Length: 236
Image (cartoon, rainbow, N blue to C red; front, side):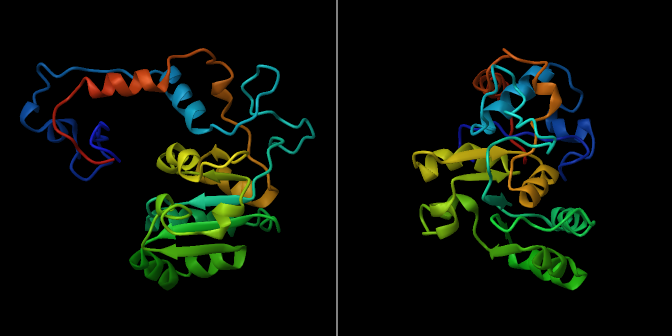
C-alpha cells in the first residue's frame, strides 16, 4: 500500500504467476535469483504485530483465554470489519457458507460490516449469498474501503467501537493509527475467526503455533529482508 512495500507473486495464485518460470519473467531460469525462505517464526511475528489488541495472559501467547470453555478470550469485540479494500466473490461465497451453516446467530451487540464493490454485490445478490449474509446481520458498503471510513469519511460504527476484529492484514496494520483513540483495540483473525467473533462477541483464540514460537524475529526484519530482494513488483 505504499511505494516502499515489497510486492510479490504467489506461484499458482496470482494471475501473472501460473508457474515459477512465468513469475520470474526475464530471470525465468532462476539463475542468480536470490532466495529468501520464510520460517514459521516470521509468520508468528507478523501475526502478533497485526493482532495488536490481544491481551497478555501471564506471559503466555494464547490471547488471554477466559478459561470458561468458550474457546475465545476475554477481550470483547463489537465490530467485525471485513474487506479492505474489497471482498472478492469467492470470499463472499465462503462467508455465506460459514454464516448459513447452522453455527448460530450473530451476537446482538456486534455489528458485521463488509466492504465490497457494487459489481461483486450484484453477483452475490444473483447467487443468493447477499440474502444469506443480510439475514445473519452483515451490512454492506460499496466502493470504498475501511481505511477511508472513520477518518476521511465519518463513520459511527468505528467512532463508537471499542474493539474491532478484521481479516485484513492491511486494515489491521493501519486501523490503530487511523482511529487513534485511547482504549481502541484491533484484533486480527481469519475469516472463520471473524465469524466466530460475530457469534460470540469475543475474539477467537490465537493460532496454537504462536505459543511455541515466542521470541521470534520481528516483522520489521522480515520486511527489510523482502525489500532487499529488489527486482520487479507483482500483485498481492
